[in-house]
Image (cartoon, rainbow, N blue to C red; front, side, top):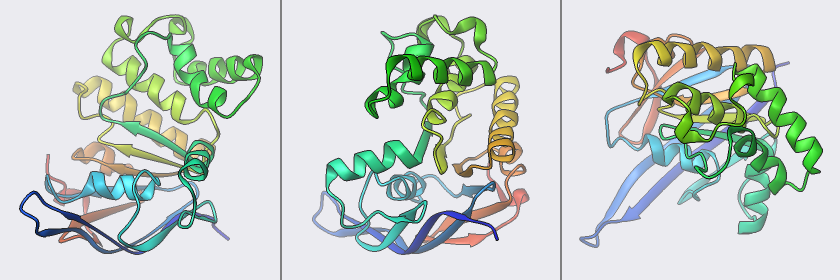
Length: 234
């Protein structure tokens, strides 16, 4: 039986705009992410894809409905409890890698482990192992400014894996990369899903990345529906 690592049940998200009117971004989203599967979410700019990712990753609370990560409900938790849940169960990869520029690649990957209170030697060993996995053994002591765009994003993937999460949420992970580096990153993400059996939700405009997904879902009108790779707008 396949384990579900992320669920969204009838999720709505609304905001009050500058004009005082309510803006409905998500209108009853339902999603189930099995372990070891990649789900690609596509849609027009402004469709609410980043909002969806924030709600799925417990970075934002839904107006209505609820999210379950690794069998643990997100609702009803304090901010401190949400932070602990995120760090333990969710890995994030963003379009802009968000690496800490004053720290080396190794130290950046160690950060989630340090936040979780892991001993320094454990954090260092785990970070080195993950950087080797993403092909950066020789670049561990380099700071982000000394890494290429592709290397920075691979470091971000290693950091996302640090706590052995249930699910990875990737928001346009190859959006700022050239074609060669994007393909290398897509290959790495596919390996992560297949080899580590992690669930992944990836927002993308890339047909190449969407083609690696087990499902492609279109976010339109605040709802998700199945679509085909050919429908992905590049």
